[in-house]
Image (cartoon, rainbow, N blue to C red; front, side, top):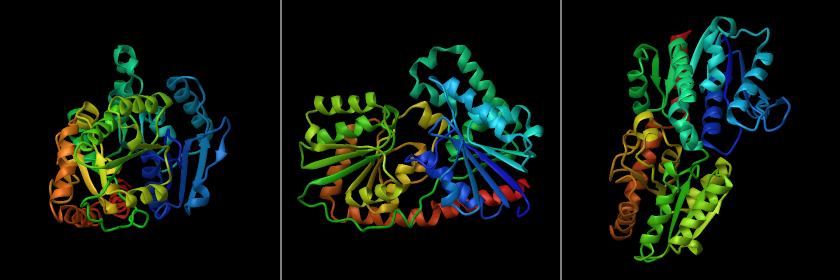
Length: 392
């Protein structure tokens, strides 16, 4: 691959304090070790094109940020596609790597004009995910038809399809993807940032709980608040919530906290850097990953970074018992897996951690070992490079 060129395009901002940006940064850093030229193209935070920050942060990367303007998602996508066509003029890389139909559909529709090989990285599909961000689209049959069509074309044309879990892979196979073009590469953890800190005893003291991630209901953050309220009847605790959220989502969480009369026990923080997030993990006794049982998590699939980073950091982890979590964690070995959507189940798990001597410590040690053996970005990048080598 040393003489090959690559353009990696993402309809996302990067760097940014969110899981997608962490994934993008890790993958392009790995690809830059093997490709002569790596161009990363992402969304700009301004109205003009810019030289992106990762050009200075990752050796071998040329990072360009293109604007995506417009009051609606569709207008922003169309604007970004126009900017991308203009930027791409006179280029034909060996590989184009895309993460969604938003940037990938124009390339897939006329692949041989854009690139030699197309890699489609399926972390999420708009036909499933979009309704969780824009509920009204669920009833727009014409829009959903277009989304499914564009997804189908990207899946049919791509020379390599990468996804993050076996649940994702099963869904893609049901949609007709050829298994020979499909590779599962789970997310990873930067263990130099999320270093290990052995947990303290939970006996007779206030428990510090942490939820990190987007503040959407399908992530189960409201269940974390309810679980805190139930546990406070048994013992002292505090919950820190950190992640990206709209003003209405934050207001909704505060209303839920008020209904449960636990406002004084909750701290809601804006998104932070990976290094700052690692410090919050080290300050926590328990990481909560209360994913909800919905089509996004059960049918499409995911590989939750919050679970991986929690298991790496040393805090005990309580997560929903779903196929996407059992691919990563083993119940009562390196995490406690509980019934999805049940605040009571999380409360009962918290009581176990306080009453069963040594449980928190054994979960912690086993979790870190699991991450180091199977879920680091170094491991993910080697799988990525192996898949690229076969492709080229």
